[in-house]
Every structure is written in C-alpha cells, then in structure tokens.
Length: 366
Image 1: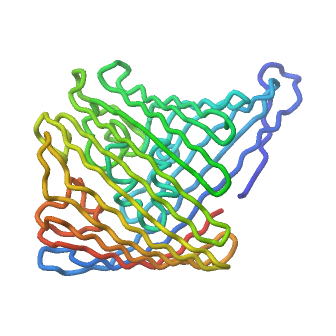
Image 2: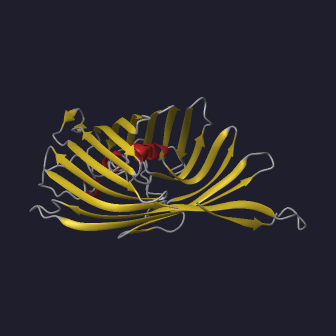
Image 3: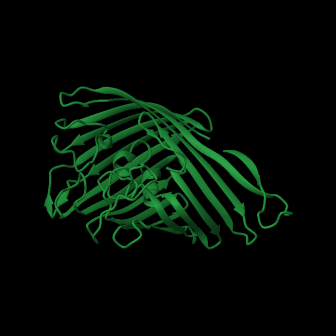
C-alpha cells in the first residue's frame, strides 16, 4: 500500500499547530483475455478481453476522544465499457470506536461483498454474487459494523431511497470465525426500484450509472426483492480449503427481466468449492446449481449447472497469474433461467444448451 501524509490546518484558531491526517492509496489491476463458445445462435465463438483497474483513496484521523474519523473515495475502470469517475464506486465518511463503526454515503452492500469474496472467488461470482435479488451498492446508505464478540460480528445497512417508506432497502449480515472455520449469513429486502432485475446492481440506479440513485416507483410494495444467503468455509492446515453456500432469491411485482405479472418468482442456488495451495501454486474446482425458477408456485424448466476450475500461480507477493475454465449447462436452451443479461451467463446465445469460457489473466494489488 502506498501512503502519503497530508498536513491540514485547524480552522478553529488561526494560531493552531498543523494537524496530521493519514491518507493512503490502494487498489488492484487485472487483465483478462478469454474465448467464449456459443456466442451466436449458430454456435460461433469469440475472443474478448477486459482490463479492470480499481483505485481506492482512504483517509483517517484519530480524534481527541480516541475514536477515528475515516473516509474513502474509490473508482473503477473496466474496459471496454465502464469508465467511472471518482466516488461512483465508493464515497463515504465513517466514525469508528470501541462501540463499532458507522458509515454514511455511497457504499457496497455487505451482503454482496460476502457473496463476492471469498464464496464468489475463482470464477464463481458471475452467478453467485452478480446474479440475484441482492444489491451491489447503496448510493444513499447508513451502515453499522459491530465490534467482534468472541469471533462473532454483525452488520446492518439502510438505504434512504426516495426518503419515504415508498422506496427503501435494508439488509442484515453476520459472520463468525474460529480457527480455520468461517460462517456467514445475510438477508436483504429492497422495494420500489425501477431498475430492479435479476442482475445485482445499485439500488434505484440513476441515469448517471454506478453510485447514483433516484429511479423509484410510487406506491408501497409496488415491487420487492429479497435475498437470503448462508455459507461456510473451512481452511485446513494441510493447504486444502472447502466452501459451501446456499442462496434464495425472491422477486414480487413487476420486476424487469424476471416477470411482468404481479406475482412472485423464486430461484434457489447452491454452491460447493474446493481448493488446494502449495507453495506458489493454488488450484480450485467449483460447482453451482441454479434451480428451476418458481412463478406463483409453478416450477419452470430453466435451471443452470455450472462447473468451473482455476489455477493460480504467484508471480510475487503482490501479483498472480491464472488460468480459468467455466462451463454453463442450461436445462432449457430457449430460456436461460431468469438471468437478465448475457454477461451473467458468459454471453451464451439463446438456442444454445451450453457455453464455455476459457480465460488467462493476471492480477496485481497495490
């Protein structure tokens, strides 16, 4: 992590001594080059690439009370189509003490972060963290993070939405860790977002893209989404690790790309993953099952099974090279679950019963 110390003057008095506030810069840079099969209805494949660069600027100041005032400003650029300005990824101010931590502003959903890493790691996240009834981000959030109680901690978030009870979102997450065991659970509910779909996104995402909101509909319970998740990971001293998780997604009302009726759609998901690390080498194998969706109690034939494997090689203490293979198998080639966008299923074209992505890349943290 690269750090600089900035000198600020106290405004309470013209003769005050300079105050020292710590500011740090961190982030990551990832390159992905890949080939995907069945990108067209006649089965043609295609090459593609993505460059993702994340920059976080963090600041903190220790207060006279012993508590800490902290903040973050973050940006992500993902070629070829995402060029966010600073603050669209994260822009919040927080206060931390022995009582826990409170944050205000544009923040990630803690449930999404729980699903994304480590459960969604090693190529699993496209249908585990990015698909579902949960949110990725709350642009207008208030969050609380508890201290650890013997390895147990919980988090609570609330997005103000439209400022009334017509449109808002909240979630509660918890985790427990002891030795090599980690357990996680979460619940979220969002209502009256115009942009709600099966693609996890910013709650009420505005026309300005990530980090903006304001697209809401009026009327209590006009539409609603709920997500539930549980999971556990165990790391053995021998270098093996095992992970398993379950998630339920529920959408009610007219939700884009899920259903146009005012009924209820439910999709359950299950994940298992195993890994082994020795020296500079890390190998992973995972399996996901996205169950057939149920609309008003009627089961559809639209499930998905996904197998993925990834090999990582440590190039340095900060950089890794990797090779990944991910294969989707669709129960119904004409209806790929309730996935809202082709990118969720690696661009698999309607009419194809499977799609495979083969990827090579590097990741470096700073």
